[in-house]
Image 1 (cartoon, rainbow, N blue to C red):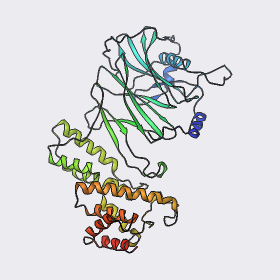
Image 2 (cartoon, helix red, strand yellow):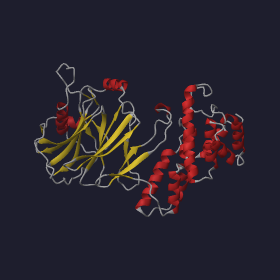
Image 3 (tube, rainbow, N blue to C red):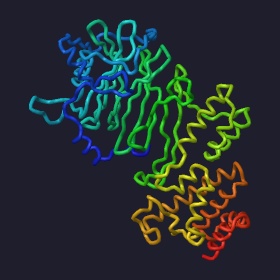
Length: 451
């Protein structure tokens, strides 16, 4: 994963910004993230603190998975005394800091401890705890620990350690109709930009890493939404390319991966060949990255009757929305190419005229990405141009493979190839093929040939 190398400057800033005094966080019922609940803590302060028994009870491999009674709200709250006891235990088990404070050595955590109540087992409530933030020593792991409250004691069931200098953002319970598992997500990251989302499945005995997603963005590697409208939340892994030119350039190819829980594992949902001719046509457009055509075709699709086609339409709808260009995109020309709207991209070249469009360093390379840059003389942008031409050739070729009559795609492919090399035979062939169809195409061809 790009960004796994830890950036020391970011880490230093992170450590300074984080709180030095860990505290328990308790999930609120109305939100999908874990937040502090100071009112509950205050009202129950007089309640006796439960005892934590480290490994007091062993769960054997032959144990039968617990049939859970799911909480009535998601996420569920942990009572303040339980949260306080488990947070204190989590902190106590952490490595000490290298430098003692006024009260002696303290835990090396630079953040909070999250305590979340999971489902109930036969012997009592399960809880998940994890240290939030970053460890003072980045080589120390973040322990994700599962406890069960048995009477007045908390019994440690199992543990998973996050390593490799990872920092933890939060823990989120995942709404789940499966009565034999509790699913929850740990959000975190590494370095200045890279983030991850890890989904765990817990059956009362075993804590299983069920899914892990990564993103080049600084957050949002994994989100939750109901993609197909069946009332069940799906897990969405970010697959966007944030580095088309560079991370800070803002030019991105938006994409994601949709997963559903089948009772045992997460299954990736993909487009599957359909017997419905209209749906299949939309799938063909999608495979060619012609999302503008998918958007046009979706309203004409009849209500799907099979589960496969229901998912096909749901995915087509979801993914086409990701690619719709925005008015404030950093490079609108490429946004139209990624959307598959080659006619719209050609119109942007027409707006500057054939002579400028035929110039590799013309003002057609404009917009927010080029602000403050002299596109005609600044060599720092040359690499961006090469990337742009490569992208135009790649995407237009996909469109032409699906339908070789898309003249705007053929023109743009020829244009991109000949702006790199005015004598490129395949590029000239493309330009010649469309020159008689539009005066602008012919003018650009002539200007390129005369270079």
